[in-house]
Image (cartoon, rainbow over all chains, first blue to last red; front, side, top):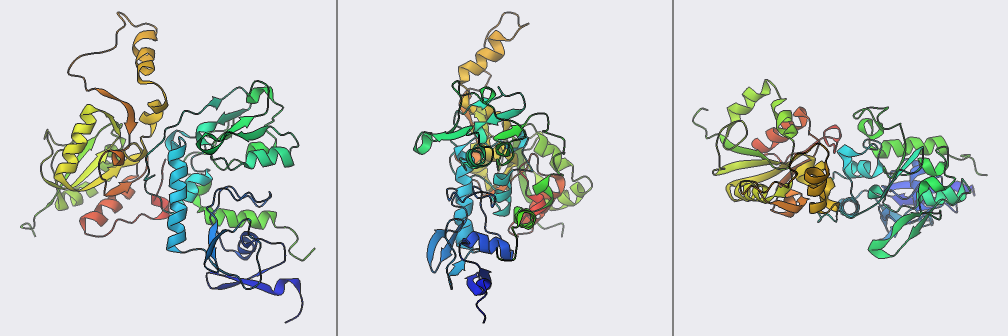
Amino acid sequence: MGASPMNKTITIDGKTVPFVDGQTIMDAAMAFGIYIPHLCHNPEFEPHGSCKLCVVSVNGRNMTSCTMPAVEDMVVANDTPELNDDRKALVQMLFVEGNHICPACEASGNCQLQAAAYYLNMLSPHFTHFYPQRKVDASHPDIFLDLNRCILCELCVRASREVDGKNVFGISGRGIDTHLVVNSASGRLGDTNFAATDKAAHVCPTGAILIKRQGYKIPIGQRTFDRKKISEVQMELIEQIKPEPDDG
Amino acid sequence: MDEKKKIRVATCSLAGCFGCHMSLLDIDEKLFDLLGMIEFDRTPFTDIKHCGSCDIGIVEGGVSNAENARVLKEFRDNCKVLVAIGACAIDGNVPALRNNIDLWDCFREVYLYEGGLEGNQIPNDPELPLPFDKVYPIYEVVKVDYFLPGCPPSADTIWKFLTDLIEGREPKLSYEMLRYD
């Protein structure tokens, strides 16, 4: 019972999980090897807390695990039928709110929205489809922007601002009219300094931002989530980007 | 065994491409096992025009026009268990790409503006079913009991699903079998 910074723990689904001050429930869970479903969260960026897939029950209250700091002795429920049902409903709402035609999408098999739906055993979108009118912007020589597939996770907004230092994307409108906008006078991606090598071009969890001329290099059936569940893929990702495991 | 009443199954393709039916035929020699357990009512494989009383109705494709809606209602009225097979029945899929385009704009583009057409006119024969403003997933029109996603679902997936259903188990697909593409 020394005073090492890792001797604080929380409990997730009955497992004792260590954490250091400043880690969120999500951070602690992922470092320990427990998958909490999420879409807007990416461990390389500041948490956003908008998709709500990562909601867990903390001492009986529902909280967003990607934004909630871990606090000693928290009792967290994650992989429960109730929470997974809520998560499935959230994913179903994302499906009907946009136009997600998987068989016609280059991202199929590499799409985290689809993979989360697989993980949650979504058999149909359940709700009434909106079939909204959304724009496709093919003006950029190397990148497609298809707003039919945007789920407003803001990862491209964050990546462009924080990593690329370009501020190419933003969010505009309110409520159901909320949408992704491009920061150029014309509103077209081709009129920005966005580049295919930018971080923001590679963080989209769906097929909203696609690099041109790449679409079917890897055939359907052999793609990331065709081979592995999103839970396994996310754990491998955490291993790759893990900061120094000894306290810094 | 022969005395045992066979499970009666009807299938149809609405706004679909018959790909799901092709995938069903892809179970190959297992078709003999299947026909040992079931008999077909209305399907594209028989020449029965209307769906009679059935245990299982399998519907491919979404609802794109008045004829689709009539057939779907006939299936729902006559089938104890209704199954939506494939992406089109479940979310509209590729036919639903027209859903955010005005129907008349679609017609004009196809029948009036397309080059090389002679005597351009929008088909208006009374025999043609009335198109709907949108293509609807079948669960937005009638109650659906089971969903079998895929474009199409693989033959193995269809076999697993059907044998579960026929043998009285809750159909359960493995991770590899649940695909939307």
